[in-house]
Length: 164
Image (cartoon, rainbow, N blue to C red; front, side, top):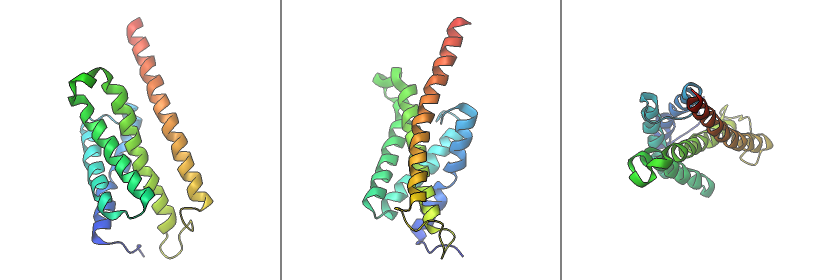
């Protein structure tokens, strides 16, 4: 049995769900979420559907803050390449912003999964459950580690290009 959700909540969930595997594929293939690729454009489209619909679905202040952060990070990541004065900083801004957008996708996704499924007997009792908090803290550590690794990888590639 599925949890009871409004039509808008189902639209939000199903509209943003494809961004989860697409973001992971991009991270594994390119080491980052690259909006210049076809998959990157699909990621942005699904994320914008999810982020915009989240504004109408989410009622809690922490959830609203995550939705706002998602919209801001997506907008920054998607548009920085079109702002001439920021062209020099495109890669780092884009990388950080889109990494944050993926974090804002996974954080509520995992929290909702743990607190709603299986329907009638969820894995976690609520957002204060130690399991949920552990997953949330793990995601935050992965965000910081992931951004750090993206920057180290970029530096390594640039150093190799200079030496070649």
